[in-house]
Amino acid sequence: FQGRGINVIAAAEARGFIFGAPLAMQMGAGFVPIRKLGKLPYATVAQEYRLEYGNDRLEVHTDALSTGHRVLLLDDLLATGGTMRACRDLVLSTGAELVACAFVIELSYLGGRAKLAPAEVFSLITYRDCEEH
Image: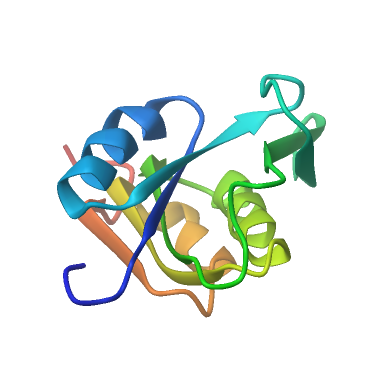
């Protein structure tokens, strides 16, 4: 992602933090944690999303992202894409620009990539069916 003008890495709670914080440090970018409702200590902006069993909300601090930020959205796993779509929508609602989404592992047979369109999606490892090891 060098040369793409990324100045913020935003990562989803909690395993995304493990990869996002060191990547932000390596790239000289800021790091923004995206957390579940009520876990951040300052004023927040939220995005609600649907789960199989109900609804949930994700939040970022109101001063964390704004116009001029070029964001790489990062998490450990892309499965159905519901949580990441909410993260994407949350990032965009702040006026920030989403450059791309990156994952360590993608379970492509669950269709999560389609839910992130038109964002560019990058995965280090892609499993194409549930029988793959």
